[in-house]
Length: 71
Image 1: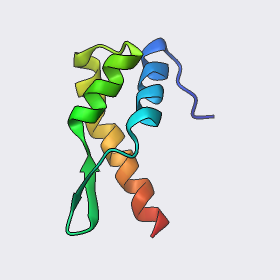
Image 2: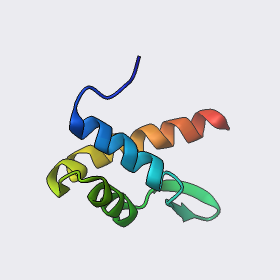
Image 3: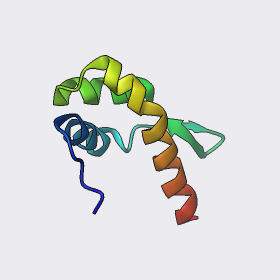
């Protein structure tokens, strides 16, 4: 269904699993995903930095959307 279709996609999916709990918080609310944690997680999966940075906004938006739907 929503499975990654490339090696980079699988690497990004693995990074999401690793750092999904590394959130930026403000006043007790989640305001985003920690970029440093994302980059370290991507590095650990072998995803290059440029691709990781390109994917970050979409990953963060998806995570925030999911968290908002859980409210």
